[in-house]
Length: 243
Ligand SMILES: Nc1ncnc2c1ncn2[C@@H]1O[C@H](COP(=O)(O)OP(=O)(O)OP(=O)(O)O)[C@@H](O)[C@H]1O
Ligand SMILES: [Mg+2]
Image (cartoon, rainbow, N blue to C red; front, side, top):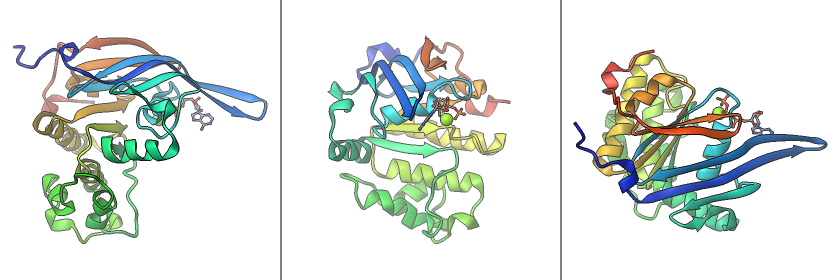
């Protein structure tokens, strides 16, 4: 039942072209990304799968504008992010990208609402922080601090924060890595909701192959290179994911 347009019929939102990232520490060079080439299509769900140390977070840092490649290019809608100055990179991160991390990265001294306001106060076209918390089912918890919430709830606050700035892309680095399977399904369900109902391009980086079930496309990263990319022709409802 092919009701969704094929990803390749959609415009390219991000293009990674032979990207390389070498870290130099004195005499030692670490080739974190050797040769990564990948297109990301507007509105798709892309799961980037790879083992520990394969370069997943390094790649995410490049496409999220937190770092620049030492070779090759990363283009966002034809704009070369490597040529952005620091201020342009900040604007790119602030306006175009929502980040979700494995360990939530909430500010411990701020309430749930204040954590979301960190983004809404600087965004160009934000939703209200209260609305964002309602969308993740946490309207009743806005005065609570991260330490008063479970891991799954903290991740929902982090998702509210990511979505509140009204970004084009949600970049998620092991978003369920610290959660049990039931909570993981809830988190993935929310992320898919923002993809389907709000059109956000969703990129999930993981070493957990089971998560590939929800992807439109799957990219495999190995030893700092994208080894293959394929359409997922066996999409699985979130409720049926298992590991
Ligand atoms: N800032 C850095 N300085 C030096 N080496 C780095 C740096 N960041 C990453 N690396 C190295 O680059 C390689 C890829 O790291 P990366 O964090 O991208 O892997 P990963 O796929 O995200 O792994 P994991 O699943 O464990 O998070 C590793 O060998 C790592 O040690
Ligand atoms: Mg990583």
